[in-house]
Image (cartoon, rainbow, N blue to C red; front, side, top):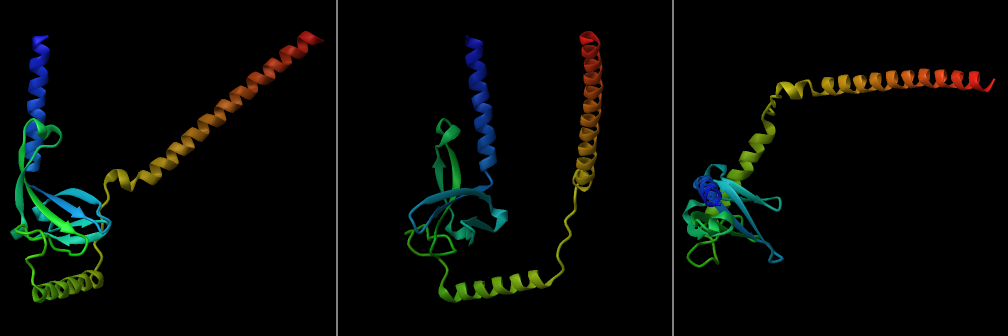
Length: 178
């Protein structure tokens, strides 16, 4: 019994340390919708944006705060995580000092909107990227056709054998009844 408890505690410690290490480079983004529903997503700082309900929200590192996460496995091993808070009315995170306004002034917002517009125009007018397929994805259609033909051939041969056995049985019954 004592060995079992030690193993369980050891496994809990391994899971908690792994989970803590995975949260280290991530940001917890909290979104409050127009209907007062709340959503949370984990992202990395490299992403540059987060998507809630099909809308893109930018990351501003000046608005990042930290708190101790104590949900799930972190209930036993609290972890310090980075945090950004968003609302449906603004694509930038809220100011962590008062959670009412953003740190972006209207002129900077206008410049960012223009930059986004030009980026999107350049992306749409340029050559489309070619997606590279894996070896399995390249031959997936061929594999499916071969499998369907193999199943069909097996079913056909099974019905032929069944038909032959039925005719033998019918001949036997006819010979007995004569």
